Length: 194
Image 1: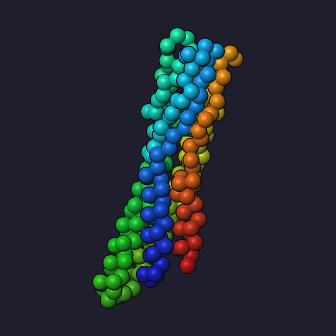
Image 2: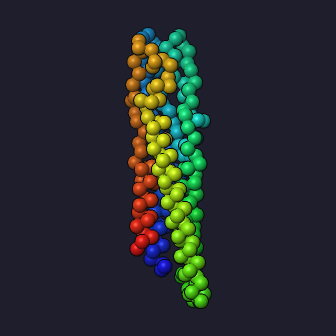
C-alpha cells in the first residue's frame, strides 16, 4: 500500500464520524384539543447522537384541563452509533500515523518488507471493522428513523387516541447528514480497492 491511498480513507473517516457524531435533530407535532384553549400546537422533541431515545421525553397536553403527560421515546441505539464513530476515529488516527511513518520513516518501513505486511493486515482489519460497524449503524439508523417518525410519535400521545382531538406532524427530522454517514461505507470500500 502506498501513501496516496490513505487520503480517501482519511476523508471518509472524517465524514463518517463528523456526520454521525455531531448530529442533532428534532421533530414537531401538534395536538388540537376539542377545547382549543387546551391545545398545544408546537410540541418539539429534540434528539441527538448517541441516540439514547429512551432518555428523550416531551410533555404533550392531555386535553383535560391544564394537565400534561410525560412521554419517553422508545429505543437505545447508542451502541451501534458509538461503535461506528469509534471505528471511524481510530481508522482516521491510524491513517494519520501510517502517513507519518510513510513520510518520515520510509526506509525503516520498507526494511525487510515487514512494514507493508503489517500495514496491509491492519488495513484489512479496519476494512472489516468498518463494514461491521457500518452495517450495524445502517440498521440502527433505520430504527432511529422509524422511532422518530412524527406519525408514530403521535401514537404515543394519549390525547391523539381520542377521535375528538386532532393531531398532526408539523416538522419531520432532516436525515441527509446521517444518510451521508451510511453512504461513506460504500465509498470506503471503493477507496480500499484502488
